[in-house]
Length: 351
Image (cartoon, rainbow, N blue to C red; front, side):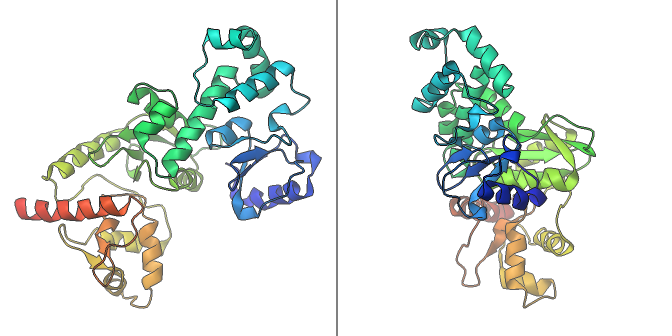
C-alpha cells in the first residue's frame, strides 16, 4: 500500500483526474470494492474510503476488482480483445481455477494469454486470476470469514498451499532500503490460526489471522521497523509456537519468548502493565489506568490496550469493563470468554 505521506497527494490527483499520475497509483474504493485509475470520471469518495496501491496486483490482492468505467487494467494503452475477454471471464467467475479446457472454451490460446498479460501487467494471466481469488479470500478473512472457507474459495485444497500464498503476500523480498528482515509464520491453535512475525531476537507480532485490520498492522510494523517481511521461521517463532501448545494444554502460566514492542512510550507502559495481570484474574481499564498512576487516562489506556500486537503473550484479553462485562476484543468476544475461563482453570490446576 502507498506510504501515508503520499496518500493526500494521490487523493488530490484522483479528485482532479490528473493524467500525469496514470499508472503511478491505483485507487481502491472501499464502499464499492472496485479499483480505478487516477483519471476515472466516476464520483470520488471521501479520502477515508480510499486505499492507494502502486500496482494492479496489489489492488487485486487487497480484494478490489477493476472498475468497468475507467478500465485500470488497460493502462498504458488500450488492452487487446484477448485481455478484455479474459478479464471479463474472471469477473464472471472469480473463483475459477483456469485449465487448458477453459481457455479453449473462450477461444483463447493459453500461451498467448500468458505472454500478453506478462507484457502488459508484469504477471501471467494465471497469476492474475490467482491474485483475484486470493484477494477475495483475504478480504473475507479480514471481515471475519472462515479461514477454511477462504482457503477453498481461493482454490487451495490443502491448508499448506493457502498458508504459503498467504505468507508470500505479507511482505516483499528485501530491498536496499530495508534495515532488517522479519520472518512470518502461520501457527495453528485450538482457537484458530495465528500469524507470528519475528526476527532472530524477538517476537514483534502475534495475532489471530481473522483479526480485523491485521494487514494494516503488518504494514505499519513493516514501515516503522523498515523491514522486509518474508515467509519462514526463526528460533523465536519456534519458541512461541511451543509455548502456545503448552498454553492451550493448560500447562503454561506465562510466556518467556522475548518480545519487542513497537509503539509509543505510553503504549509500551500499558503493554508492560498488561503482562503483570496474574493468570486467572481480570482487571478493568480504570484499574489499569490507576496502576500506571494515570487514573484519568482510561480512554487512552483502552486505545493502547486495543493496539496490542502480541495477542496472548501480552494478555489484553484480561481487561474487562468496570461493570464486569466483557468488552471489545479484536480476536472476538467468544475467544475472550474462552481465554478467561481457560486461564482460571489453568491457574487452579497449575498453582
